[in-house]
Length: 138
Image (cartoon, rainbow, N blue to C red; front, side):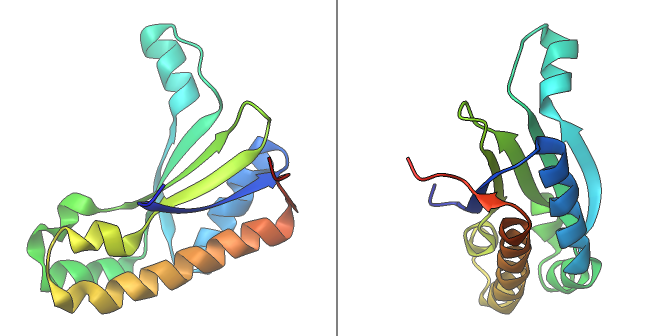
């Protein structure tokens, strides 16, 4: 995917979610919402779906800086991080590429914020990868 940055690991799904949340918190992000897509689709549609969670992550200082520079930026927040299990029982942790996301605003003043968010997200993904075995290569 050219609009996300991601890692794939072998591990218990819930443990990977917990490690992702902890790593985001270590990088200054709070998880404002945690959407269990599997449970929601079962409840609302009666459909079975793989384990899939959407974590709405926000770093208050960076969000404040961004919406101060670009008021409409709030429509793109929080940054979503997804955790899902593949058919091969690997767990993928994926986040939107901040440069792609903030590029929508076409405001060069946001470039530094995008770089800061990307560095923090990459450290989060690295921490998750360090906590679990890397997924096997297909």
